[in-house]
Length: 170
Image (cartoon, rainbow, N blue to C red):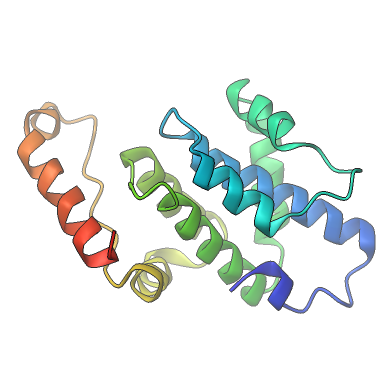
């Protein structure tokens, strides 16, 4: 599902523009969270939001993320959270797709997806349902990076990534 397939027709143009800006910012946060914005991630974002010239560029949005502008990220989450369930679910689908666009699910991407699901009032059950629909498998449990044992368990992390890739057909 994409925002284009949802009912945006009744929304004023400036509200649609703000929503698109917020969604693209949040998608770029997912893309940049692994430390590298892959070409496939940029192509995905550009395909969902073809430029009209009056919106911030992808590089402008990446600068917001690199500057750790949490106010902008919070505002984007609040705008998205105020939308109807169909739009919020469409966003979650796009965020999941963005997270796996580079054929890798980074730990940070997994945590951000879980944050988004909670912040936009969909929750972990809907996140897992949408991940299964998109990838064919559940998102792996992210674990607790604050636990030293988690860092020592590199073999387990490798197995989870391999399992996710196999189930997602990557």
